[in-house]
Image (cartoon, rainbow, N blue to C red; front, top):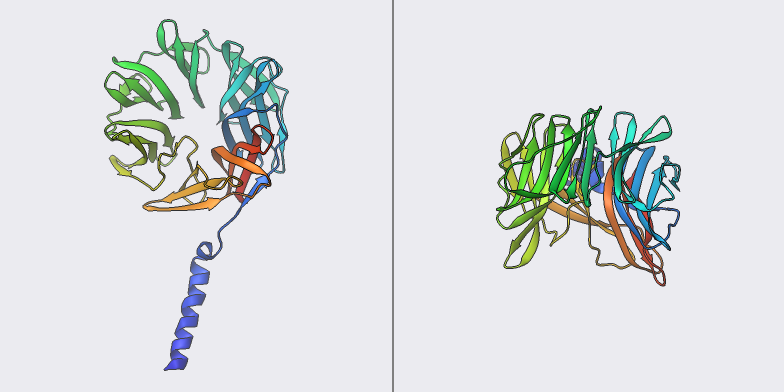
Length: 349
């Protein structure tokens, strides 16, 4: 009987190792060196086309004001790119998107706005039709791009259809668009501040409408993650007695499902769907010398730490992206005695 039991135990262990190797080996985070900038820096976005190309955007605080900051990942290392129009002028870089074979980046050049486009290794710029007081967000897909913000006449939704710009109206009661994202030229989503609270809007190729998303009461929206499969994930904060807690809403088909993972009041702007199918996002670390990441898979939330950094007093990844079979983050690290400079980490790959 003891011999039979030993054989069964060995078979169970062997089967477990074969069926679920991921359960036994957890990929670790490694630090990716990033050339320094004029600190302190602010990171806006990071996006990858695959394991061999990624772009990270933001701005640095030079002696004479803000300057746009752009880094390119070539599959081996991060390098600073200063070849785009206006690289040496005042301004900042915002969201970066891949549109077909091109990389598109929002660029505030002085007071004016434009979209930088990189094709076949060369940069060009598409200027906006008007200058706004505030450039809130940008998104682009094949055949369409949007820039949202405000000018002296109020809210503006600027739409580019591949040939020119138009201004799109929004439903009555919309005061401000806080963010926008799109899956196709006829399927765009935005989250807005309205006279009755936060609302999610949807563009169907003809008009912007209220998407009738049943957001939690007393809540806001940080991000909307649209996936090719049709799945939609919304992340935000709900306030109860003045205390915020993070919520996630997911729609597959026509039903919305809401969960409250143990993330405290984490901002979900940097959330991505990882190569393992789970949601990943950076969270505030309880270790000054290491970053921290949350992995949310259904009702299960786990955490992992980034690489240890000597003499660091604050390691803060801001944005994440999927790069092939790995995850990549980009943010800032503050070393004792200095100001925040760019940092990047990778898991897997």
